[in-house]
Image (cartoon, rainbow, N blue to C red):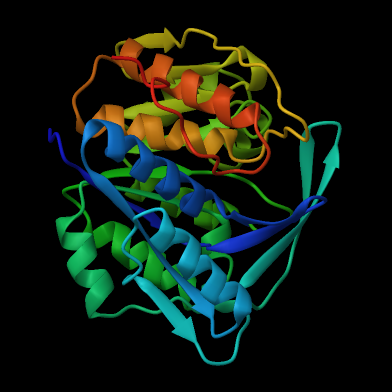
Length: 298
């Protein structure tokens, strides 16, 4: 337990190409940005470990993170591959994704900076998409294995065809926390020899010795499961701004869960914070809006 945690987003760093223009994105990056903002209010900080292109979008990404007060040392530069992009189409407020292949974050490589970071971080968030290709898959897995002292949140975050039973099993095995949404559960559970409904969660917790299972349920909020306790977060609502979308709401939930975990919060407090942050992000445009003073309460 610590009051000034170091939290790492690990994997894809990219730009979501939204109808309103390019917006910073990638689930672990979104989680890191929001975790850093939480740290600004409560103590602690976050960084993003990824690889970007030697291009305008890559420099824009660095500039944006630095403007948010984040250390960008763990961002590798690739001399050939472009910074990652995702074409996002909104159906109502729900996003659909077309993820561009063979980009810089697919080439994330193990180095001394990542090794030092893995050994000293308090928490790390990683997912399936950041492991779609080598060498990134091996790098992500090595980082998580090296970070045995940390809270390790595996955000399942299924995208297109970029997942497999092997990657899922490896992620569950390496993680102390698993997060997914209610649409992903019936897809993932059978791949891990579990049933496809909420009854599978207890089985997965036992099978993979998880400390916490996080189920996000859209407007119904977050539900947290341990071996001995199940908690539903208090549902939060915010007025929607123009061009609001739900991109990044689940990643804000990840940031809250990691802060709550490393700080030793009661499960109910963590679930309530996850709902508060997720609902606020869903009421705004883009995945990483600035969090206002007072959002986190006293």
